[in-house]
Length: 441
Image 1 (cartoon, helix red, strand yellow):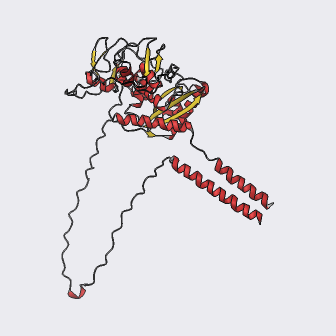
Image 2 (cartoon, helix red, strand yellow):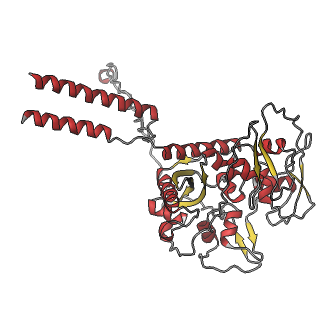
Image 3 (cartoon, helix red, strand yellow):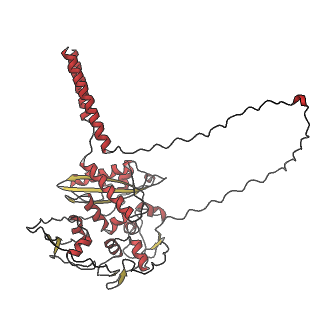
């Protein structure tokens, strides 16, 4: 009986050790894409996002849903929107979501995709959101990524009723089959319908600048269906000398300010600032615009940020939220609208939060009675017999209590988890050895 009890105890100890969770590839990929996004933000002079576990739970849920159903959409399980999923996970604030995926897609390729898509670029380069969560899942041979960035709010979003129309439009991801290296080491890709140079650079993990240099193309070059793009040059290839990029870009048919800014590594605000344009400006084919400050030239004066938008034909609430990089819910609150509201041409919408109204400081109340004068005490000289010559008792000052430092919750590094597992395994082995010696007696 004693031997049976000892073996049962050993089984429990070993089982509890082996059941400890270990980092998965999905967790590593999600952490990696957060790291890359934050590095990108620091390069733009923006603060990195803070990692939020609640947003990560919402992002992982949607990444798993896309992988299980083999689809790319912001609409999740039960018809939920990104805002609803974040609220359901317990997040109190406003959020926006980026998704991307593809066969064998890496976190770096996902970041390149977002950098070159104007709407997704606005999410990762926004200065309005401060927290981030990420998720990654694999299904049907493809990797699915989702990030949710948010800004906490004092008022829970769940207090405002939502509708089935409170959902962003679906995102269409065009699949791409990667070409294999030829005998000379080169890789060539034939352009298919719906593909672009920045999509090729994302899938092959090649910078857009290198892709242009290898193929002797300019930033304003037009590629067509069936063009063969050199992704990797043959072995022994000597690149041509790098030319100084032109600060001027000639607008092509179909170009938008978003796309020109993203391709040239600018925010939309920077591009508009360089060219003295407003959000309502319309670009025309053949128009020359600045994409960088020419050498020796002084930057233009700082423009006053736009705070309102005048509705034009074709505008929608979702489109305006994406254009100005604001949360859909915030746009509704600032303008006292609902998701079902219909916009009218010429309507003025606020695209920035209203300035807070200063509260005047109350003045002190006037006393109702006049203070009475204080009588001056009459000094009386003490007699020598009543004078005490003893030293006064010194009372030490009471130290000011130091408030305790706020608790900081940090994720345990992988090295600590690894050492913890080894120590736990060593303890289990010692218990097994001691039990074996005890049973042999």
